[in-house]
Amino acid sequence: MRLYFLWLLLIPLFVLNACASNNNQTLSIDTTDFAFTPNQWTVNAGQRITLKLTNQSGSEHEWVLLKKGEEVTMPFDADDEARIEFESEVEPGNVKISFFPAPDEAGLYRIVCGIPGHLEAGMEGTLNVK
Image (cartoon, rainbow, N blue to C red; front, side, top):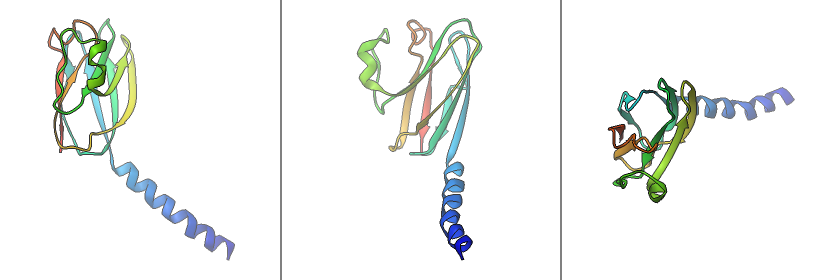
């Protein structure tokens, strides 16, 4: 009888875990001198995102998701911090894995590299939230 009740408690946990793992999307991105590859991504609103950044260059890079409709000033600096939804940094030659929830509001979101001079050199992209 005890085993029966244990299963009644555990089954919902297995179901919730299976549902949660199906709601995850991985974005695998290579960073080079002044580019993200790819530089456009599509995700579902509110979806859990696994971000895998692979730095193939000799300098640090950042993948910075700006809040919807936000633009940054040139150069990108501390004045832009309030415009950031999420950011992740990766050191030269390393791989960084991080997690974040996609924004809840559908639309296009700007991605920039927050390292000084990188945005000015064209290191940016677009996240399409559906």
